Amino acid sequence: MRREDDDKKKSGFKTLLLSVILSSPGPLVLGLGLTVGRSSTQISDFTRRSAELLAIIASFVVYCITMRDPSMDADRKKKIESGSNIFVGIIMCISGISMIVLAFISDNEDKGNVIPAFAIALSGAIVNSMFWRKYSSLHKENGNVILEAQSRLYGAKSIVDTCITLTLLVVVLFPGQRISYYFDIIGSILVSAYMIRCGIKTVVQSYRRKKA
Image 1 (cartoon, rainbow, N blue to C red):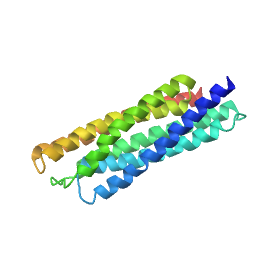
Image 2: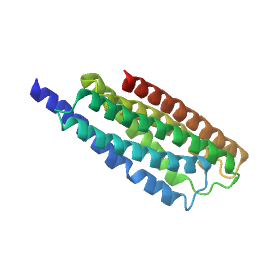
Image 3: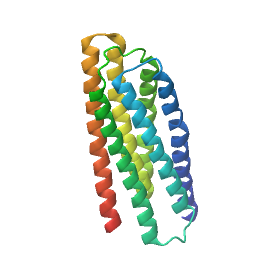
């Protein structure tokens, strides 16, 4: 039984570490892509991925702290985990709000080259869907709240990346046309609304768990 618990902890550790590693290049590549593309969805995606990377790193650190100290007081552990998940939720809300602001202040119809952002979004949709399933499975196995928050985060990320992929595809297929301009704005708004909804849900549930 002890060995089984250790294996579950190691599996969670490896998955979180892999999440950090695979999420790290995204903001850098998108940041470089902004030198040739000016899509509001592309800018929003850069802001979102940068914020989410901070949330994933924070969750990884907290998971390591709580899992490697079996003698930690249960109440203290719950507060630390809940605090981390609240931070994840807040990051999701900030990310969503940033997208809405950027969508409305961007009035440039010439989006430039958005192919780098499109490639990142497409690969993100695939990889994040895999992580979503993995975190959901890990949470069902051991009920860890950090992994639960990551499951919700990656669920949102996979859906958001799918929306962004479709939006940028329209921009690529119809460059400089009004349809790509409006589709770009609508894509940013839909993505941000979903992120805010998921963020609020995460904060509320984590706060209730912390007070319980």
